[in-house]
Length: 522
Image (cartoon, rainbow, N blue to C red; front, side, top):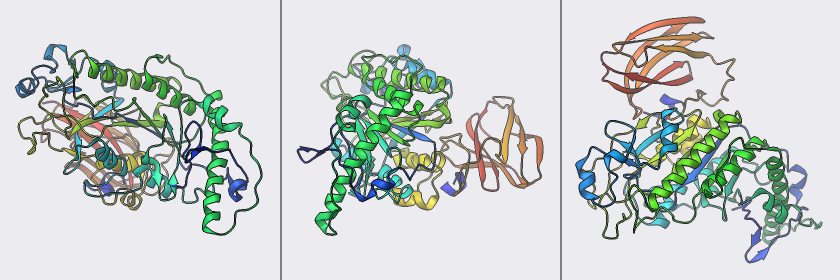
C-alpha cells in the first residue's frame, strides 16, 4: 500500500568540548551569519527520540516464541522457559525483564514491529549500522544519514541561517552519522547540559575580519559558524535545562534512563529540537558469550531499556508532553536462532523493534511470530518488514513530510505501516483539534462481534470513505464510500467477512485521514 493511500558536513557537530582535528575550538562569533542566528525556527512541535541498541539485540529472547518447540531445541541453554515469560499473546511472551515494556504495550503506548531488516542483510556491526543510519540497500554506500537528509530538506537555509534551537541532539560522547547532511553534521552532542555550557558557553568570542572569498576563506567561515553555533546552542540548552524539570525519579545506575531524563527535561524546558538520539554504552547488545537467559547480561540490558522507556513516557505524561513525543528503538541486526558454543548468540538478521509514545497505535503487533523453520541459507530469520517502512511511516505520519520529500530521503517509495494515531493532511500542516474535519466519537462493541457501530462527526462536507486494513497495511474491506454533509452520524457495519484479530480502521474525508484500532472476535 502506497504512502498516498495511507497518509500521505557543515553543520554543528559539537561534543562536550568542540574540536577541530586535535585542537580545542574557541567559540568565535564574528561570522557574517551571526546577525541571522535566531531567524529560522522549526516548523513543527513534534519530537522524535531514537534509542539505539548497539551490538545487535536478540529479538528471540526479547519476545519469546514460547509455544514453538524449535526455539527450545535450538537454544537448550539460554531459552526463556515459558512459565517465566510475561504475558503478550497466546504464542509470544515478554522476557521477564521487560515489565516496563509490557506495561507500555498494555496501556497502548508501545507498538511492536516484527521481523525488521532489509534484503541481503549484512552481519557486520560497522556495515550493518552504516546501512541503518544512511537508509540504503546493502550494496549502496552513502555519506549522509537519513535524519540528516530530512533536516536538510526542511531547513534549506541552514547553516547560513541558524535556527534558534539545535536541529538534533545526541546525548553521548560523539555525533552519529545519522545526522550527516551534504554540508556537514547538524547534531549537538553532549553528556550533560551544565557541563556543555561550562565548556563552551563561556568561551571568549573575539572579533575577526570578514573571511576572504576563496576556498580557504569558505573553510574559515565554516569553522567560525561552528564556533558561533556552539556558543549560542550551549546557552539555549542551559536555558531549557534550567527552566525544565522532571516529574519522576530516574535511577542513577541506569545510563539510558539518565540520558532520557535529560531529553525530557529539555523538552519540558521549551527546547524545540525535533530529533534526539540516545543509546546504551558501547556494543552492549553484542552477546556472543554468556548471554544468559532469565538472568544474566542480556536480561540486565533489557531491564535497563524497559525501565528507562517506561519512566520516560511516564515523565512526559505527567508533564503533559506525551502526545508531542514519539520514538523508536533500533539495532543493526538481531541474533542467530541457534545458540553458539559460548552460551551466547552470533550475529543474525531480522529482529523486532519498538515504537513508543502517546500518539502511537500502541498495543499492536505488526507482523507474525518469527518463523523458526523457514530460514535463510545461513540459518537466520527472514525479513517481514524493511526498516525503511518504519522510517517512511515516521516521516509521513509523524512529521507530515510530503511524499516527494520522503522519496528524496529514502531514495524510493516504501509501504508504510499505520504506526501513529496522528491524523494528517497531505502537504499541509495538521489541523488543530478544534478544526479537524472528521472525528470518530465512539466505536462499539469493543471488541466487535459480528458487527461494529461507529459514531462520527463530519465538520465540513466532503467525500467520506471508511475502510479496514490489516496490520501489514493491506486493504481488506471498504465499509463505506459516499459524499457526507456536515453533521453527526451513527452507522453499523457487518464484520462477519473478517477473521478474528486486530485491524486498522481508516476514516478519510477528502485528503484528511485518521486511524483507529479495530479488534474483532467471533
